[in-house]
Length: 256
Image 1 (tube, one colour):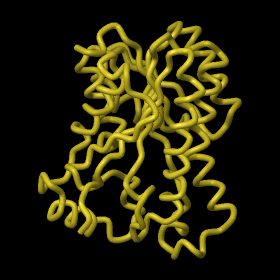
Image 2 (cartoon, rainbow, N blue to C red):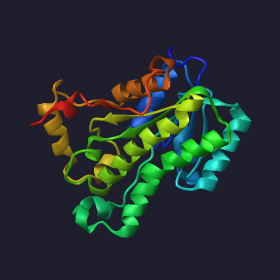
Image 3 (cartoon, rainbow, N blue to C red):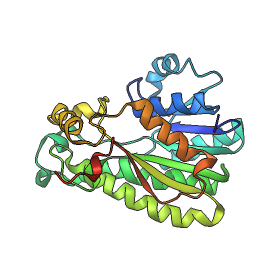
Image 4 (cartoon, rainbow, N blue to C red):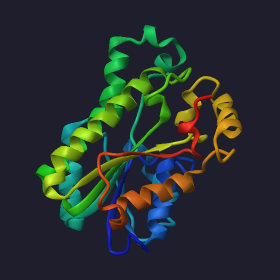
């Protein structure tokens, strides 16, 4: 129960196959009280049904690319809960055509969109949460990233650039927030069959390669990645900040 008595915000829940859902299950099983954000009020009924197993949860609609909506979110959370102990940023998006076409053909608007939603939103979340004094001392902010931030993966394209920006932002945020006791890290998850992964061309071949080449000779699950997130959200990781921690069966260490 390493998150007992802690209140954790999970941002970007979509469905039961998402990494955010796996992280929510792990956090809940370790004692956390959970708050969620999701996109689109028309999705509320579906999201609330999905989250019904998490006793006492509350879900807010929020477009994390909109600073005004983020401000309203954190004001509402502070009013409803007081301060919180952790945030999982599970938010990313790129236009389908920018994933399906060669990277060199990425549009200016598509490039801006992917980086705004997938990387800058973390900066905005951290700043607004700090400015509104929503985070307890020793709070932890954790994001999700992927190996395509450091290596060329066919079909990942502009999302790889956005994840690279996210990872660099994590280091700068860790430096900025460290003096007030707040940690910022990311989990780089191995490939998982999520709804987002369907947008990546030939995704199944990536799964096959990881299973063949990774030291553990298997892919990872949302539950395993969720457990790694729980660790970073807990006090057991209080000496860790500014880090990208891989939960990918060791695939990232391999040269061939």
